[in-house]
Image (cartoon, rainbow, N blue to C red):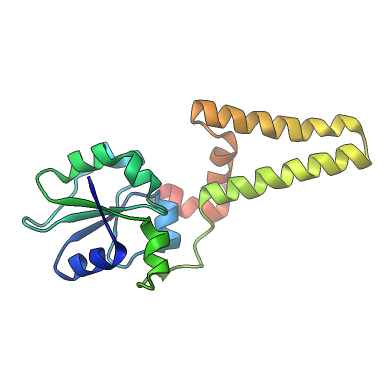
Length: 174
């Protein structure tokens, strides 16, 4: 699939192109390009993509890595429409000075929550291990093992737990 600059993408959008955000719903809710339709990669095969005949489809993620890595799946979803990946994704869109809608009332993206909690637990384990008892270093080891398991299996227990927190429940039910 071909890439397109954010500036060229903005011009195509003014001419009726369809913009599709492939990030997860929590990422889209927090910050998005106005007019972008949310179609997370995790639900790509289950969803219909309504496109306008004769108009291109533009796909974006945060940095361009997810869209580039799944270009074949996205191209298949676009069907016979001309399809592009926005080079550099939302980050490049913002650097180009183009409009972005941000809703700070939405919680941080789930993966940022996981990173913050996991990092805090590792630091806490190191501090407690050095100040209270060397046995408490095990907390850092446990968190590290959990991150390795998440990376290998694709299942993150901490993300599952955080998804149940009150501030994340609205998105979980959507």
